[in-house]
Image (cartoon, rainbow, N blue to C red; front, top):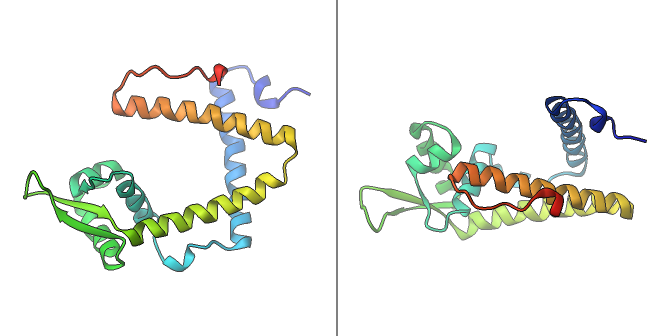
Length: 173
């Protein structure tokens, strides 16, 4: 039987079909996670705080408030109260920039890393349970899909960073 998404004639229609399936998947994922509980809910961290914490963890040298605001696509004035709450919880610390004392950098702390690791452990456990329900062919298909999505994501990152690095062809993965 042919996949209905592949039968659609145009690329925009195929993309919309994939997005529709993705939306259904996300809704079911949310329901399944809610039914099982989430290990990091005790941390009382908001999604914007989580995004900021994740960005800071990805930059060992930290980020200035202006850089963090740009990456979160918010105004710089929104960063101060957001970071204040993360500092109060001990997830982030502020540090004077070594090269320019006018700049304050925000850096993730060991407690901030611990929260992110707790989240990752919870996500991995959930995905392990989900993947365990699949047969070998389904598991191989999911693995292939992740490989292809990784290539596409790398292309997006390369575009965002303005690099022209050669990217592996998805058909070769």
